[in-house]
Length: 98
Image 1 (spheres, rainbow, N blue to C red):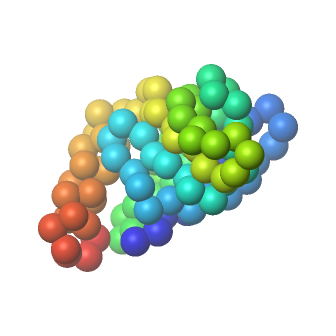
Image 2: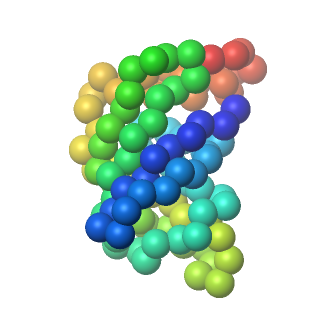
């Protein structure tokens, strides 16, 4: 299941898609990466849940700077949002639809 995420930085914003999200962060496998250490603002909703999750993130993983992909760690995720993401991830892993 894919989740659309808005990523904002000082240059503007872009939309990315992820299938890899947890309460600690997310990974974009098709994003042109920002530099490791870059700070970004993230905004997304989980499928079936109209509430928007907003938090700051830090780029912590760029597997190959000549390719696409970057991992972002959530910095200030609200505890209630972390619980919603955990419940969503568990449901997806168990084969259920979220």
